[in-house]
Structure formats: C-alpha cells, structure tokens
Image 1 (spheres, rainbow, N blue to C red):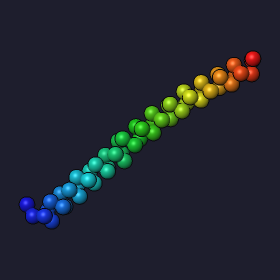
Image 2 (image 1 turned 45 degrees about the vertical axis):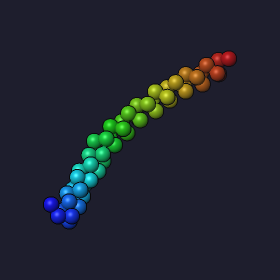
Image 3 (image 1 turned 90 degrees about the horizontal axis):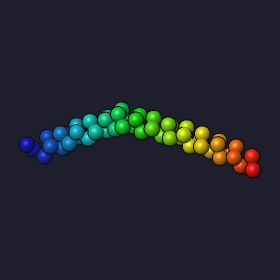
Image 4 (image 1 turned 30 degrees about the vertical axis):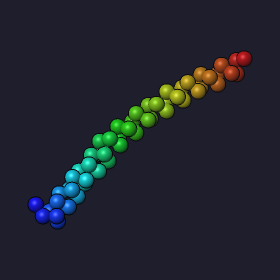
Length: 54
C-alpha cells in the first residue's frame, strides 16, 4: 500500500467516525441531557416550594 492510499483510507475511516458521532452519539447525548435537565427542574421547583413554606 502506498502512502497516498493509506492516507485516503485513513481519511475515509475518520469520515465514518465523524458521521457516527454526529448521527448516533450526539442525538443520544442531547436526549439524555434534556431528560436530566427536566428532572433537575422538577427538583428545583420542589425545593423552591419548600423554601416558600418555611
């Protein structure tokens, strides 16, 4: 395998990795973060209610 061919092969594999991260990992991470923020929001609302009651 020539150096140029190896470079092109590496470029193809890097593109596959970037596509995977963009299309699979990032959306899943966003969804998990959204759920986490919703839970935190509910907990903060409960804490605020408790503070107001005191």
